[in-house]
Amino acid sequence: MLCALAAPVRAQQLIGYVNTRDADVVGARDVLDGRAVLMGSVSVAARDHTAPISLGRGGTVRVCQTSVLHLSESREMMVAAPLLFSLDRGAIEIQTGATATDSIMTPDLRLTVRSPGPLDLRLRVAGNGDTCVDNRGAGAPMLTVSDPFGDATYELAAGQHVLFEHGSLREVVDHETSPCGCPDAQGLPLADAPIAPPAAAEHPFPVAISEGLAPVPEVPQAPPGEVHAQVSETLSYNAQPSLPPSTDAAAGAPSSAAPPPNDLVHLVGRLFRKLFRRS
Image (cartoon, rainbow, N blue to C red; front, top):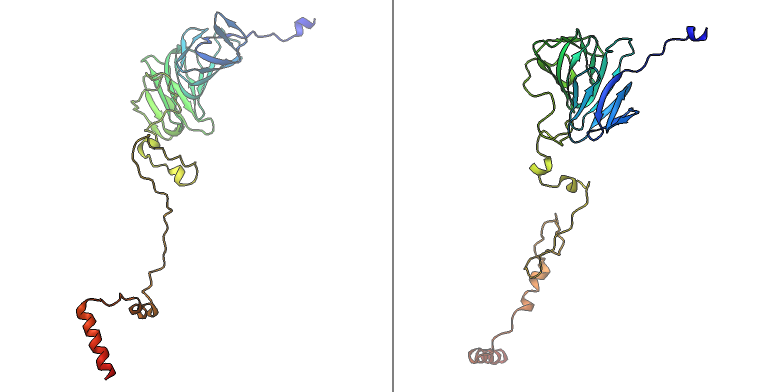
């Protein structure tokens, strides 16, 4: 009687497998032959190279290096239950036979498959929210892109390649040319990759030191035997103007004059002056 009234228990379906050498997995309970078994709800964080996920329904999801992907299966009682892919940052490439209501989420957008079809999707989310989507193939299913926090929608047709600037449905570049999937170079964090050379390379002046935000580096010592100059005095600046010499100093100048010469001509001259004074 109790068994008849009990609700049927639905067994979890297999999402897929990923090699533990390629990614760190959270939520997987079993590991078989070095591959984590993905069921229920799991997170896959790719290491410094692309991590391929073999889907149980057939097909592959490539989690590009340093990207983080969350996968969940639907609770619907179906032979091939819809899947939810949630990308925090970075890029993924999905190649599978999509089912209706399969969904791909980013921090700003939700992409929903309108009808079954061969899905070959490239998706990249940049650090500033720019979301690049490439729905490859002439027979690719139509995707509805919606804003989870608003009522705006966008229909992404087969073969369409677009960029949602800052993750906004109102700022769409509908003929994007930059790639949306995994880059060719390995080992570079996708969301954190520098767009321009570091400021320190272009502007070597240590601004942080001048602002007192970093310690002043020590003056390098000259190699032994090399002649070099070093300033040891402290430079100072006095804003008061220089004063001319005082009158007393000018009056005392004669007192410090040099003594009269003692040659024969001058001695005779001084002698006559004394004689005439006495007279």
